[in-house]
Each structure stands twice: as structure tokens, then as C-alpha cells.
Image 1: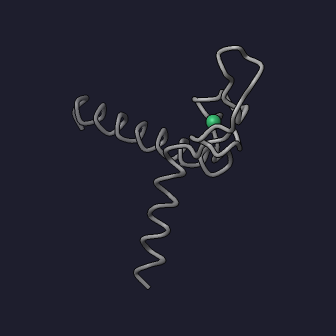
Image 2: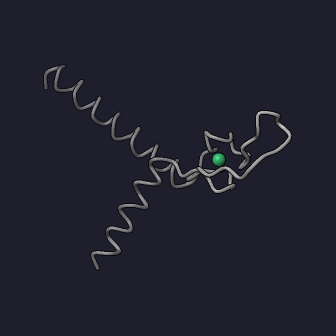
Image 3: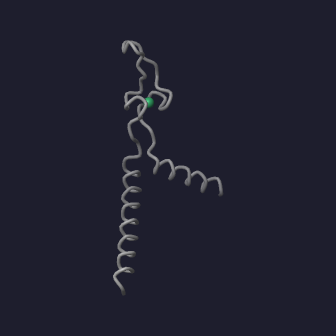
Length: 82
Ligand SMILES: [Zn+2]
């Protein structure tokens, strides 16, 4: 095997490992803090005294991570196919 093929295989395996690691992380920790309200679930008025519920996360302060969103989407597609 020439070194170029070896490098390609190593890079491919590294890519697979990173993808699997990310998928695992999205399975264990499916949420991230909402970027709009920094995970507080509130949107402060300019005076900082009044607030309303954050519309992005419905006041929960959490957002699904992209990997988990894709997983849920694929799962629902599979469910509908049955
Ligand atoms: Zn929010």
C-alpha cells in the first residue's frame, strides 16, 4: 500500500470517528443553550427590568442541537414510511 492510500484511509477513519463522536454527543446531550436568550428563556427589554418569553425556544431556554434535529427528522420520516 502506498503512503497516499494509507493517508486517505486514516483521514476517512478519522472523519468517521468524529462523526460517530458527534452523533453520540447529540444522543447524550441533545440540547444546547438558546443563542437568542443565552438559555434563560427570557428576552429582556432595553431597560433590563421587563422581559417577555423568548419566542425562539418558547421560554425553555434550550434548543435542539443540529445533529439531534437531523436524527429526529430521519426518525419521523422512517415512522411515516411504515
Ligand atoms: Zn431562547
